[in-house]
Length: 411
Image (cartoon, rainbow, N blue to C red; front, side, top):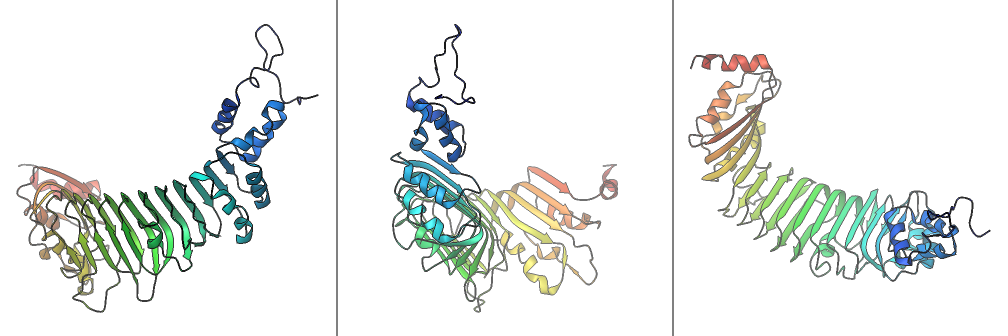
């Protein structure tokens, strides 16, 4: 019997036994299998439906292997696969050794012309010239970057929980000579040997979150791109120096703790972004720590969290006031005033804030932690005579807010 009991023929309304599904063209059958988003091994099982379905899975343009798929099954599937190109290859591995993956990944590389997704693995990556998107989540396993080759069509590179090894540097891979079409670079929980130096004529967006620069004395991040529009840097571990030259950059967000160079007169960060419109800069340790070139188009500024009370050894925290004094006009300024729980043996720091830019829209948050905050709040408001719109947010109890506003009830 050609059909199994599980494969029931679709019947016409007149009760005939014509198999209308199998009568459809192969292209439609393949499209059905793709839209099912099932694993490749499950798609292969459709061969039992009838002779018309046998081998159709081998022409699928998208291959998906779930967790638990044995590497030799992946290799055999790729060997039997007949489609000229693979637009998506997703492999989710568990406890696979590098040798087993090296047996099948080079087989897929020449035909891959779209997305490559590999999770939970340590691997030596080949150069996949026609890949458009690469997402690697290796759960803190190692990745050795290919020393040669051009990722000519790659537009989106995402590395998550990866420890980079080998002589090839990350910056060499993502720069224009080897990634001429790259638009987005995303790094999260990544360990990098040495520095990150990027020179790109195509990048539009860079995001780095919890990236460790494993280099003696700290690492350097140097980004030079005429095309970049947005950069977000968060928790770059052991960052010693940051240089950004991006003439078209519109948005810059930074929240990193930087290691100081032995030369106190040398800036830790140099930023050249003349078209910048939005700046979120949480690190500032005096006028010599950061060198900003002129930003005549700056519209929105978040200058970080300001301690209202502190000690002498926390001077770098209230040196952030100096960042505000670098600008004459800001359309929208966002500030946060923070009170520590124990104020004993701490001095009042708000007097260091002597001038603010001319502001149109002020957004001010207060984290009082149970303390009276009226003095610090009005210290800021007295310097904002040109404000047209004011947004206040208080992390305080209702009773505390009523006490502070009581003197104004009769005004």
